[in-house]
Length: 283
Image (cartoon, rainbow, N blue to C red):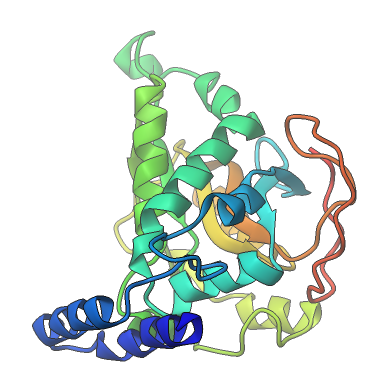
């Protein structure tokens, strides 16, 4: 039954096409016939059980040159259960993970120190000393082919949750689709080398038409950091547009540091079997 539940969730992804009503009906029938299990371990009646959720409780720092903090942070290592959960959410339409993953990234934001960096951003002289430029929370863009395949902007629920968390902390913020990708779809992050990924991404990220970025602080959000090529190019494009990229957040990274997280909880973590990206720094 565990395998049937997992196969049922994946089968439901085939109903995301233009007929949205039919897709909703078919997914509802699927969920009645095959009640869902945890995305990580198939424990019954859970979207993400406590044990699997705990795998996302770390905070790995990784260099992001060109950003104000010089860092991006990930909540987990992209392997095993974590990889399965993210792939179910990202590529198999497990949208029920939007909520748990949004809360995970909000927690990672709190651990990372990026919140304090954004709180210290300068005020807008034209608006008076009590007003700061809103922080733009910007998702790393997916290729048009990937968006058509998924049928949605999968990062947007996470981006909205982060923006709301910043506002609740007294930091003005809004979401922005400020970046677009012109790249075609390609092989998954685990199937290409670091050099191939950098070449595939290079030159295919641009500022969205009409986006106003001059002087705007930006928090970048991605699902997985593999080589770091995506976030690096996003950072470069934002800087050339006059924005102030603060740093990045992701659910997982493909290469783990062997020590520590943002709060100093140290422990040995095996390498994730990634694609040859540079090792991460202990935050």
